[in-house]
Amino acid sequence: MDLTLFMYLIPSLIMFGCGVYGFITRKNMIAIMISLELMLNSVDINFVVFNRYLFPGQMDGMFFSLFAIAIAAAETALALAIIINVFRIAKNVDINQITKLKF
Amino acid sequence: MESLGNIILYFIVAIAIIAFSVLTVTTRRILRSATYLLFVLFATAIIYFQMDYQFLGAVQIAVYAGGILVLFVFAIMLTQKPGQEADVLATHRRWIGLSASVAGVALCGYALFSYAGFAKRVITGGVDVDMVQIGRFLLSTDKWGYLLPFEAISVLLLACIIGGVVIARRR
Image 1 (tube, one colour):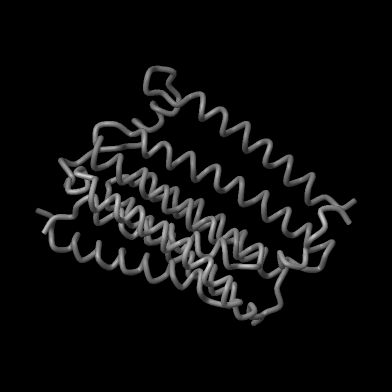
Image 2 (cartoon, each protein chain N blue to C red):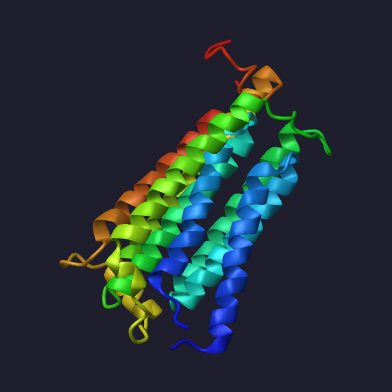
């Protein structure tokens, strides 16, 4: 039995589907960010696996994943800062109850 | 032909990824959701190690599991009461989410099954990605160099630091 490219794409695909489901159904802002991380992570897996299987001599997919991880870290830090600031003002992080952009 | 240990490791990782991703989006306690996300990120790091990209796996564990998860846990602790559960989902909302994700997964899965001939490939030969090579690539301006994205990332991180300070400052 061989480990084909296909066998790595399936878990990644399911992870992305879970991310989409959580992104649509969750109401808590932090839970939405967690779903977003799932989606970003599955894309990283795809980059790395495609790189390793189709172009083993090059490292482009690996560097894409590396930069994607760095950008995801920066984006998460900023988003959580915004969420905590919103919580400080509105005492809530539920997207149904935060309807005003400016208080 | 892969070694038996590699195949067993693959199945453990694949099942862990699928199970914990589903649990991450279905559990109603958000701190548990963050914990399941941590397991998913560790399983992803194991995939990177399996692909012989040791540096990427280390970065995944250090930045994602070590940095982002701690941020998430801090934000959850600051905004939620302990043991607080999310409300039960409205049925129509759950159906919208389920149909969107299942449709997307089915479309991509169909495309993978029917069109992708490359999906049957197996790993050819071992690659040797050492730190010296990664550093040369990151700081070179040649055809395959990554100096410009590297500098752009550093400016982005600076902007992120300034933005974080400005947003979180008390007025």
